[in-house]
Length: 256
Image (cartoon, rainbow, N blue to C red):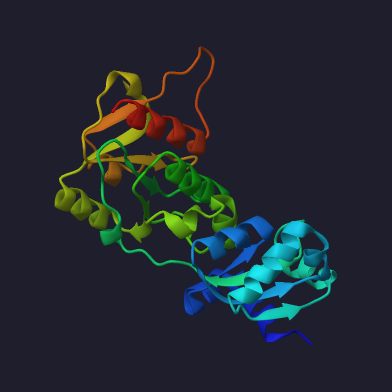
């Protein structure tokens, strides 16, 4: 018979369950370490025997106990059945990740807010959040059609960035109001745009990357001041959305 925690994990692997509960799942030693370090609230954790078989795993187990996290010991085979990764490393935790609204995302000189327009792949969304945090972005704005911030695959790919980077979902109208409220410019990553190396970034800037196939929708394009491009070597047509975002955010930061 499945335990309450195991049933909750299964429930949270579905979008409907995450929306109803407001919780999500974190798998693996490093991600659970990151959640503890960031002060994320835990609802419980399923742990296997294998967690205590390494020094790092034993330390994590002690840390979970010291934070009064509800623990339930289960056979490793049960964890493997519950986990969405091939190697859950002996721990699957249920967490209540931080909730940010749009007011928490504020432009800052020398960096750019990252806007995601319809980026559907959860792995890409998580990697974009991780990249934005690493490049000093003050936050991220996710437009409709972009993967849910609480999707476990987003949480996993972000590797802790979800716990630290202010990120919020909004509509195109919400983005337009945010730009006006902050007197910020919107630039769009576009292969036909002006080279990023030829531009000086304004103090208040947001950069939008689009859907992996369709790109940025027209209603978002209409809000943009500039289209920007990354110079590519002859024969290269495009870059992965995460790589492109990382280069642009780096160039904005480097140009200050």
